Image (cartoon, rainbow, N blue to C red; front, side, top):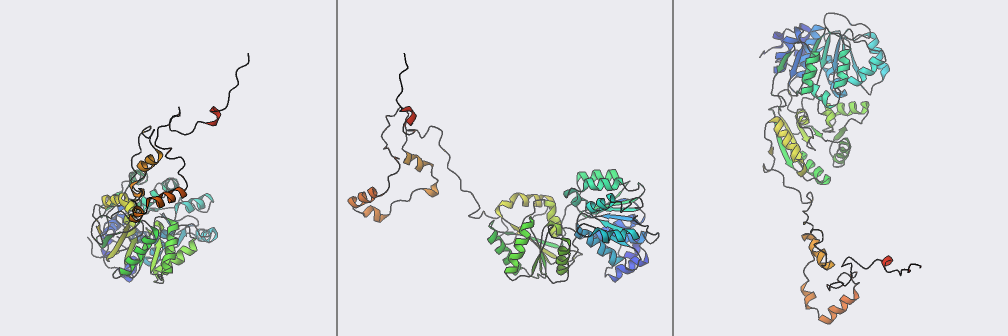
Length: 476
C-alpha cells in the first residue's frame, strides 16, 4: 500500500490541503480507489464505515475538476446521499480539502428554502451534493439540468436501499448523460445493489478492503444484560455511562424516535449533558444539536439511526446501543461512529431478554463473537419479563358433573392456589368457626352440593324460564 498521498497522482493543490489537515498516509480504500478514479474508471467501493471512503472520492474529484468551468443550472458532478447529515458531512470534506481551489458547491437537501438553493444553482456549481427526493423536486421545477454531469457518486448505496431510494436513483440515472464516470460506495452489498451496478456502471473496478459487513478491529465490543422494564433499563445505561473508562463523549442509539426524546430528557434530569437527534426534528435544530456535540458543548448525543451513517466525528470515544438494532447491518454502522481513523473506541450494547434473535443475527453477520461485560453468559430472563406457563385446560366435558369449586381449583394456576389454613384457624373452636362461615356470603349455589342433580339438563344450571311457561292446548 502507498505510504504517501503524493504517490497517488493527486494534484499539488489537493496534496497540500491534505497535509494541512494533518493526514500523511492514505487508508487502504483511498490507496486502492484513487488511482482508478483519476483514470476516470467506474468503480464499486466496498469498505466498512470509518475507513475514509468519503475522502477516497472527494480527493480525485477535486483533481479532475481543476480543468473546466461550471454553467448555470448544469452541475459538473453529482453526489447522492441518503440523509441530510451525510450530505452536510461530504460538503465539509469539500471545503476542507478544496480550500486551494475555486470550486463552487451547492447542497440540495430538505429542510432548507428553495430560494437559497436556486440562487446557487443559477450561478452554476461544480459540485452538487443532494438527497434523491429534493433533487427530483428541483428537477421537476426546472431548476436543474443534469445533462452536463461528468461524474456521479452514489454513496451509502445499502442505506439508499433500506430507505427506499433505489427507484429515485434509477430515475436520476436515466436523466444523466450516458458518457460519465460513476462511482458507487457502500459498507455492505445487496443483490439489488448488484443489479443497479450492472445497469448503470460500465466495466467497473471493484475495490473491497475488508470483508463485507465487518466491524473495525479498533472497537472493543461488549454486551450488557438489562431488564426489559424502561426505568430499570435507563438506570442500567446511566450506571454504565458513569462506569465507562476514558469516556469523553458518546452517541447513544435508540430504535424509535419517540424513545430518543424520552431518553434524552431522562439523562438531562439526572445531570448529564445530553441532546437528542432524530428525523422528526427540523433541519435547523438538527444542525444546532450536531454542531454542539462536535464542539464538545454536549457530552452525550441520543440519536436514532439517522445518525448511524455520515457522522464523521473522529474523537467519539464510546457508542451505546440502548436498543439492539432490528437490522443487523445497522449495528455495523452504529458502532462505526467510534474507533475511526485508527483510534480505539468502545461499543456497549444493552441486551434485554427479548433481544436474542436480533443479537444472533448481528453475530452471524459480523462473524465475530461478542462477550458480555459481567459474566460472558447470555442474559437470564427478568422476573417480570416472562409469562407464567398455563396449566393445560381440561378436555371439553371433563368437568361435567363435578362441583364448581373443585373445577375452579383444578383450573387455577399453581401460583393462585388457595393457601393452607393457618394454625390459628385450625385451633379456633368448631362453634366459632361455624358462626364465622355462616356470616360470609354464600358461594353462588356453587356446591349445590356435590349431590348429583336430578335436573334433566344436568349440572349446567337451572331450567330456563321459557321452558317452564304453561302451554295452551291446541284448539279443536
